[in-house]
Amino acid sequence: MLVNTDINLIKTLSTLFSIGCLCSTLAHAQKIDCSNPNTSSMKQICAENFAQSREKLTNHYITAFLVSDAPVHLLEDTHTLWFKRLQQCKSLDCYKQQFELRIEDLNFYTSLNQSLTNHYLKFENGEIASQPVHLQVHQLSKDRIKIEGIAYRNPNNKLETQTVPFLAYTTPEQKSEITDNEHDCKYQFDFNKAILSVKTEQKGCERFVGVYRIYD
Image (cartoon, rainbow, N blue to C red):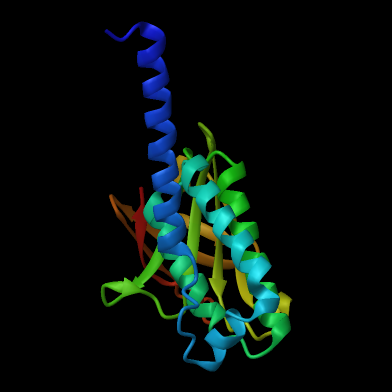
């Protein structure tokens, strides 16, 4: 007959075994597949000089998955988008930079409370937009909302021109009329359950226009 200490020990071992299996599955799912690098970009990514970066990335992804309260699908989809950008690199500096940027993103998901943040990705024709845009709506307080975003451009650009930032502050009562402080662009935000529609009549402000889906 098992006593309480034996039962607790079995429960602990079972939990550790389950976590170990989960980590192993995640590592396999998100680890960059270097078994058959058949393109020039994959040969660079899978080169020995990036072995440490690949391992570090995998460890940070597993940590984010286990610790962060950000939606799992958000971690998965942003990881896929990042990997597509990584494969666009044409220089060693670009590859190194992209590994570092993704690790920073994963640290962000891990270190901050995501429960008061709604994440949106831009979609076109039922798929994530070919030029990805990520918006985050933060509930800072009962009367204060912060909206920040990032539109991704060519990763081979200089670091300061690889992305286009978005930043706005508003209130629940004025959530539909948004001014981007970064570029003085005025937008109409239409929040409708899982869908966010962003419109503008200003020329030069079209990059953030479109339909977004929430990740929850």
